[in-house]
Image 1 (cartoon, rainbow, N blue to C red):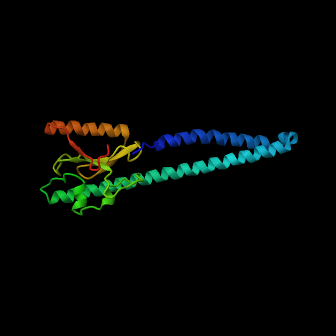
Image 2 (cartoon, one colour):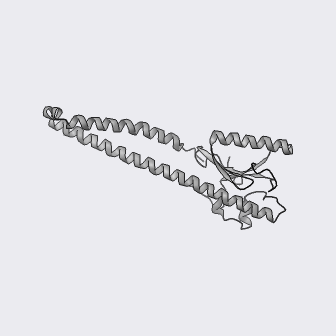
Length: 209
């Protein structure tokens, strides 16, 4: 999948462009509408006023787009967190019928009709294939493992690298920015190695890295 720009960077760039443009537009309107300036060159003043108004309108449209993008990103995060919450419930339903063991992979939950395929698709991802799974899964865990161990999490490009949702063994989830996520994942790996003497097996069912 092609890399996409991070929303945070895009918002910063838009503000860097939009704010100076708004200031310039305001200055042009002030100057062009001043009596002293208009008395010198009425036609030039009108052209400057129209240009300034167009810049101001463009800035307003840009600000509206930015606010809408912020709202959409927040909604996507909430939907992704809801997906992981459902996945957590499904893994515990499976564990109840398998002596406390979680499924070997997430596809098992789809194959056994415990959860529908849409629950495994991150809403940020526009291009979706049937039975696509957008989450990494830690195989070999049980419902008796420590509650703070990582069970499932967003793949790297689900939210443009801005951050990831993490599902833990006890079913609760949490959003982390990317640096904090890497710290949390490394903490889990260390704890897993200390407890079992091996590295955890991370399953990515659709082969995405």
